[in-house]
Image (cartoon, rainbow, N blue to C red; front, top):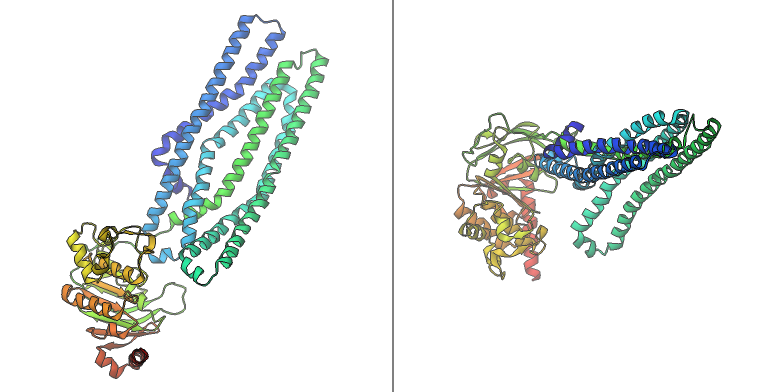
Length: 583
């Protein structure tokens, strides 16, 4: 997983390596400065000449400037490397999601995917920056400082035998107790994002039922849960400071008391003033290095959950892949279901579709009728291979859909859903999703077929009218007709309308179907509808119930042999007559 994540560094390897090199240089220089300073103090006590003092002082200034330069350059290179790493990581996650089948996507909620590509990537980015910068500098500073303290301090260096283990143990325990709270936070971020997403998507419903206060309470509850966990974790982490200060003051007292005593008793032969000064400096460097290492430990441990969640996306293998030698052309729009059984999950107890055997000739118009939950949408989703069958096979143009190149198959099969989506952009931009090279004439022709040209022409900007995200500035019926036009621009071999005329009136619905018969006679048209009037003139009508095809035939044939079809027809006819009488 880590190998896969750090592969995202790619073209930013150079700044990452430069950051490490600069950190090594800065650490080496900073630990050498106290040593040179201590020697300078001793030389001053010994009555050194001013020339030698000035040379040593100039050397210290140069070293300080070089150290500052290394630190500044490292800040630039680490920012460039970590930002580039995060950009590549987000891109890889997004690209990976595009390869997912519906089965893969069903494993992750949309709010969870948003959290992983934003919050989790941000945490991983911060960890990466700390790894190439602070996580290199702090251990080096710790090692160099202890070595130099042992060289300079003699018996005074024994202070580190006490404070280093105590501080290390204290900081590790603090981090260990803080981690469970940090881990819980990330899962709660998913719920928070889910609350926001539901509220934004369902804004009209929320306002329609005056449920704003309920939504506020739900959001506040999710936000408070995150706050409580962060407060608990931060309260524990805040103990770093007093632990650090205790060790720092102990080091100062020990060095000053013991060092002064040794210096006085030995008259400077065992320990001199320069050594005491250097030990105070090295003590500060050792403790600060340990402090930074503890923060690195906290940050990386906190980010481990983010690493894991991102790794789950990147390591997830698409359940649907192209065959080794895919077929790149669909000959016609015939569709065959042969012994098809299907369930969404391998662990499901029963099949969603059972024993489906069906032949649809190319160019035929097929209607599908069935109650809610009868698996009408599931049936048609198998044709463009949005899901793979569990048993049996689905063929388009006489070829098993699993043998086609996926893009080729889906280019030949257009699906228009009841709740299809329009993207932010002009009407032309949205329509060209069906065919990016479509001419203005082809766009207008498709819109006329979908009965969309009439209302588009009334807009001041016509086909250049801006569509808001999700198509919120057009009606449901207008949105459906634009989506039908978009599908027609693909010039598909198979056109599937999944209850996609539910928001248009019966007259417009009839005009759309009439246009199909005239302009796309060779395209196989599969129409899922709740209104029998939408499919009664079809060449073939399927009646689904409980995931099974209970009857197949024309309208007249089904009126005789299908009780379900007959009951629906009578009920809809009576309701229609009742409505007309009331009018």
